[in-house]
Image (cartoon, rainbow, N blue to C red; front, side):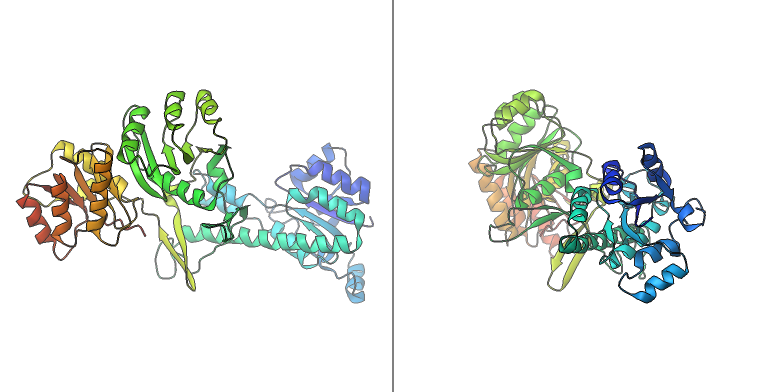
Length: 514
């Protein structure tokens, strides 16, 4: 055979037509292994097994099959060096001019909840990356493919030859090293997550691997003059049913909305603006959830994000359709709801799929000269650890409101204050330099919405550093407070609560959100 193409893939989409093109249009002979060889033979192609080509059998459950000098010599031999060619001839090594390999699906395997450590290890591909790297190193002479999307163009470039083929081979080689780098990074990240680092910290690696594929180039970033792109597997978690292309800001908001709604099992709706909740409510009827969430703040939702943890029907869709919003997220939409929303062509509708164990994800942020890595703040303090620090115990109604508000306030930018009733927000104050300012904004928002804070509870993401914040809440009508505690002036704050007949709980856990 004058020229060989070695083909061994796990993803076999489009493979048969590509292999036939290599044979019929370009005169290649096919070397292959296992299931790929069977598929090609069943399609009427003549295939030579790699083990027949090398004269060495597959062994150790297929772990050893392509790791052989007749494979890698055929890939790495420099066609422009006489001594390379002479050595190849001496040892009976035929040139392999094209390699088509995609790798064991390691990333997909470890993403499955039922994946065991042994399953993960067995899905680490050794021969595939080795062949790809050998071929990519010698791309001046070897065409190397790791992506089925390149099949059609490869056949065209092989026909053109010359500089067109040479440049395309360089492009394919780059894709190979990007793929093998990402593949090794995924393996390293998985092993890191299952191991202690050298300093004994579980899951926080001594070296951070950040290598994820680009999923989408975005129109721009936070502002039109900023370039931006989306990387990773976002599109496996959400399906966009209609509307404009998602923007950078949309993606940030969708993530914030997803984390917030994940706090609730009961039917719940949350409305967010710039990642901050501006209204959240739970009830057995999703329409009641909307009424109470929207009532918290009827101005901020304009251009915001709406998220529900139940399917949205036509009755709710009619109500929501009267509000301009950027994105609506839900597990599903009835056909009638889709017809209503379909009239708003720019509205983005997102179906939330499995979030790939979102609670286990870590957050990465760039800082000057490096990155910060942390666990996501999803572990709310256990109620068993809460401590009533005032003379008065909270009532059942106050406890219900505190449970609800404590879930919400952790998703509000610091300094964060939330006034809550039983299973609904009444006022939200976010992102102020002073906790008193946040409280005043929350009170003002409640007043604008016509909501009475009498009998509400006040929730603070961090301790009240002075009694003034608590006093302001009491004057607004709050009868109970929930906060982490831990201030040097805790006793002063507790005294102020007791003087006003308030109940107060210390959770022992802070929820800053910068």
